[in-house]
Image (cartoon, rainbow, N blue to C red; front, top):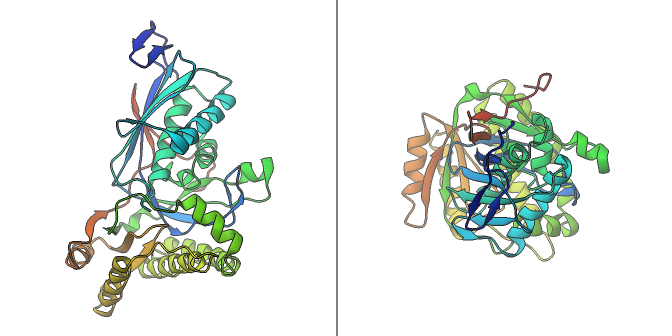
Length: 361
């Protein structure tokens, strides 16, 4: 996107070098049905295995990036100045964008999450997908959707998938270095006609004591179960793609549940073990089993956190929601459906990220 230059303006945070060089992007979280867990390259965020997700239509992140005449970036998150590791992570990402764009202006980044942050609800996926989209536009980076997915991956691996709506596969790629970077990207694979629901059962909306990044590193380094899980996950991904192609929602749910429980098994067997699942999480898993026993197609998936997501048909979603919500005051539910890819919300007309010609659908 090209922005028309305008006269400089001044904000309370610094002189804006080009007020029109601002972009606002919105992106939604995705929930992996075949999990991303483990990196083969920490610097480039190259995964050990491929993964597959469904982008949601709830809990969006909205991020604006404005170029400023200042000696340092300004970063605000949910109305508060970002500090520490969170700020450093965003500044490192902006440095990557500046390098790729051949620019050196600092930026003012203002971002807000509509959902919980750091609670295993994919806030980093929507966050860096929105940041990548807005920053690429503000710095006028010439990049195609595949390249933008690779860029978002450098902020958060799962963000590569939130660039696109619907069901999305993230290719692990091959090798390391430039070859690995070029071959590891996400793209949509269709299947939207399935129209499933995902009932999100939140039992703890606070930030996790152990970050996903730290837990992933510890698990891959120490769990004797990690390698067998990774090998089985490759098979799960192949089966999941076939299930989506034939619109087999029960098979999709079965694969998703076993893949997620296997991932948590690798964490439990890390040394020392990492346990995200709480007694409330287990209560929800038991309720899902009871729903299936009663003939309701419901399957659970859980990211690195205590909150459980239950895949079901749109028609069954109200009943699944009622059962989970009825477990007690410890659970709060939201029902999600298939959501859109990241898009620019301003200035100018909104533009969603769509596959480039020749990309797999």
